[in-house]
Length: 634
Image 1 (cartoon, rainbow, N blue to C red):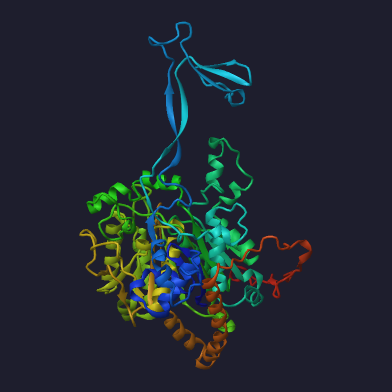
Image 2 (image 1 turned 30 degrees about the horizontal axis):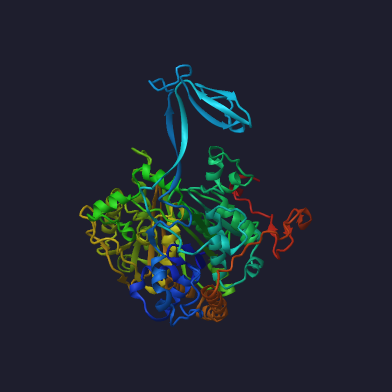
């Protein structure tokens, strides 16, 4: 069976740029020094368009933290809502006002009405009940209200939720390419997929010529769809705002668009594509499709990801109406203070009152192990399995159920079959869903504690990156995967610094939930990703360290061939590092292939054996073995 190995990863979250572990290092900042620390600041400063010091000279690794370090820290991770997208203190709204005719003592004896003078062109048609109009000079009419009527008055309101996991201050994905009225989530898809593909260090044209066109797949989605003004949100609000829907809003609002955009504008792929949606587990659902495809041999290259941009007033208020988000009032009550601590708004497994919305775009590139060996690709880990299960009968759509027991237990059991009991007990860790709600801290910890007991795990290291990034809905498990790759590389597990202690009702007898970073040196070999979504969507994935993968590759291919692979990899690493330096010293280069000549009918040749496509060295094979040969006689 082929092993799906991760050869590239990238994206942008509230912690910064994902590739080369920069975003991960923002979450363990107190545990790193030297070039790792300075490179993280250089990456974040460049992303935030802070490329010059106070003297006007370009920033360097030596002075970046002193010059702009505090700005980088203040403008990243969870924080108070900024007004770059909208003003959270002045959200436009309409208030219904009931009007009645003035029949009191001061009313005109001959006319018991309320009169309003308006332009004739603004007169509603049909007229509201209880209203009539009288024509005046100058294109005006007198609108008479002779009976009870309702008007909508435009006013402003302040959001009750003022915390969010926003992209770093000053970063604008739309400025990196010709975004052409793309919703913010699709902008993030272009940037994140571009980052992942370029982080591989092998040109995409080289990759595609080493496989058949249909041996590439792209699986990506957005759980919420694109709900800002350029997507479905703008379409549904247009008439209420007195505007017209655009020709793009409906199409760009669909939740499979993150995959469609990557196929069309980043890769130019004609391979398999799809968009699995499983609420907050959507990224893992898409990863499961890709892993199964590579393990089966149907695909050799997979680009997996998603992007979510849910920080809009409507989505914030929707989740707040469910009592799912932590409000400013609840933050004040938790701490007994007048001013809420927005930086500590998300508190997984601690005393909490709701989750914090975040925005993020994350993509990974997977090869099968043979292709990675052939091309010399860097291997950052491998995804051996992803399991998904539903919850069965539910009391409510948001309540937890038994499905997560199945996914976690199967993930641990499958990993045990590969590495053995001792490795699971002593060298694994868990990226918990950790949504920061009172219900999650109890139910998820109980599942983790029971599974730990079943497998003989006494002190299971647990983290929850939502403490740093917030909850990016469909991309949340992508945030977990990116962070896990960092843990497997640096062997430091981020703590949960936003809590003072683990809440009393958390089941943690066999769990190690730390408020500070945990050093896992020599013990970070298997990472588990757990995700729980509304509607009973549960998924758990298993990620193997690059050290384990190296052992597996040596066993499969032999020491000599593996040494030759390492020689090929040296040049690949140099190209990848050059890309990283480019991003640290200037804007992230986006791949955006809009306007390139598309394929037409003359570019395709079909025979009974194969399909040839111009631009692809290899063909699509049409000769299949009969999988049902045992069902035929003669």
